Image (tube, rainbow, N blue to C red):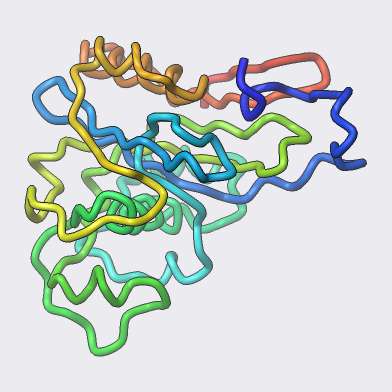
Length: 230
């Protein structure tokens, strides 16, 4: 088990006295013809270097104010509200923004640019797009184990790339993901993955097979690893 996946690591002398509070984060799983988009994290990154992951990252305060072509479905909004103090749309919009920043892909549909975009959204809005949140399914929530140097309360969304991408051509990319590739699900499972990413791939596979599953909620407790369905 990698250090970022380990639960408590009590022998670590740098371990803080209290478990850091998880930061809200969001991730987008893009699917196309049975394949999934994944990117490899930079070797120099302090959090899960070299691992293959879905595009995603921390939710910023301004994300909730970004314009959208459509809002989350009532079902997705209700599921996210279970335990989340932040606006549900902020998680979905963060997943869109992070996919743009990390993979250079515009998730959304054509829309007239606004005169003033929220902080962090100017480059996205300049593409003449607005997120189509109704097409994003909320599929999982997971909290990083306690006493890790960085902890996240991550919300995972899934969408059909052919329905949500404005253009297949990346307009650029960030420094966190070295490159992105489309993998068949069975091939993706064999990559160097964080444990939670491997678990979410299983959820994706079940959904694509037509299984009606409620989003799982994974976290560590003093009694050990726990998973419930929302």
